[in-house]
Image 1 (cartoon, rainbow, N blue to C red):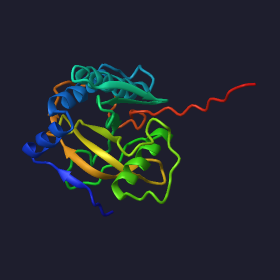
Image 2: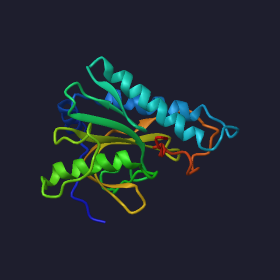
Image 3: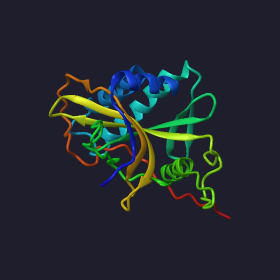
Amino acid sequence: MTSTSLVVSEPRDVDQRLAELGLDATVLNTAALQGFAGWASCTKNHPPTYPGTVAWAEATRALREGLFTRGWMRRNESNLPLVVNGGGTIAIAIASGDAETGNKDGFPCTRSTRGVKTAEAVRVNRQQESFDFMDPIPVIESINTTGVSTWLFLIYRDLATRTLRSELSRPISMNDEGRVNEWAERLILNPAPFADDPEVLADNNANQSPEVIVDIQKLG
């Protein structure tokens, strides 16, 4: 696989770029650790899909709460929960990344298949990147603007090194399996260590951030 991503990995450069986005590494790392705390609180007696769901939910909550004081707002695009800056130009969603997450030389993908709302946001990002307005794309109204840039905060739990690896990256492509697999820009955060010894199994593929797809039809 080849990639044209702009990869920013030097801590000083990452901090500068995050500041340009109205963010910092602390608020992102806090969200990642809060998600991990929720995941690590689970046991093998919980339903197998629950640890990933609670990790995703707690990380989303923590990121929103960490950014509310800076004027960011929560927004739910159906089943894609976002936190959006006050100007409505940047939106962030939480997602589980694969083992390449946080590797500046890697080619990370989302671990789980993403839903239609992520696909729509990816299309808008790609349109912004290429400025190809000759190929109009059907997107939801709230995302259908060249002024909105959607980012994914990818988080990967590495139990071998007892660290959380993460990156804030802007997606521009999805593969045939529905996983995001290409990025216009990747901001690599320093790994965050953890000391917990979770009982829940780490290699359970169900432990991923969900994007529930619900087909709702109006009756009558």
